[in-house]
Each structure stands twice: as structure tokens, then as C-alpha cells.
Length: 151
Image (cartoon, rainbow, N blue to C red; front, side, top):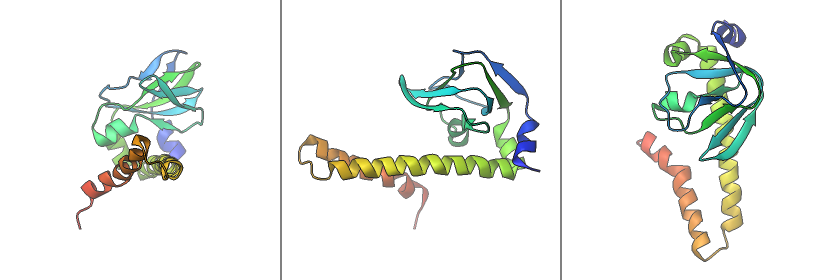
């Protein structure tokens, strides 16, 4: 089955402008795939991105990590989303969707990693308290990898 066909199996939900799809800190049992419109992703009141690409997914981090949502997602205008109410079963049963979600997560991770590398480069010669950020960034870049992989 194609990615598009799998997502088209899901119910469509209309979300009015200004309504939240996801609230930061909320425990989720669903994910959403954008069908049309624009959504804003923010964390602690700071805008992280505006998403308008059909097929983009939100809510996946919370579901996959079984943690509260890391961000708030709000409809900027009237939005249509495909709602997946049992995402783990859906992803297990649709490897093409799992690959799509994995690819999107990898793209985000690559962008975040590049950003951290750029920040490290800018701070490499700082000797004051700002220079401590270099050590913090090293910790962020490698901490989770050490937890997941035992050699």
C-alpha cells in the first residue's frame, strides 16, 4: 500500500483557526497528518516552526517516546488533518508510513544537529560562562546515544 493510500484510510478532522491540536505537556494517544492549511508549533510560547506541507506529521514524538507532548500545535487558519487514534498499531501495520515518519524525524534531527554544531563553532573561543555552553552541547549531542547503545 502506498503512503498516500494508508493515510487516506484515516478520518479527516476540521480544525478552526486558533484551535490547538496538541497542548504542550499533554499525553497523546494520537498523531495527526496535515491535509491542508497551516499549523504553528511552539514550545514555552516560542514559535519553532510553521508547517504547511501536506503529509507532515505532529504528535509523533510524544507517542513514540510515551512522554508528554514537547510542543503546542495550533491551527493558524482552518486546517484539515488526518487523525490517527491508534498510532502504534497503525505504524506497525503500515511500514510505508513508519518510514515516512522516520524520514521526517531524521530530517529534523539533522537540522537540529547542524544548528548545535553552528552554535558550538560560534562559542568555541569564549572563555567566560558562555563558553560552558560548549560542554552542555557536547552532552546533548551524545548523552542519549550513550543511553541507547551499550557496547
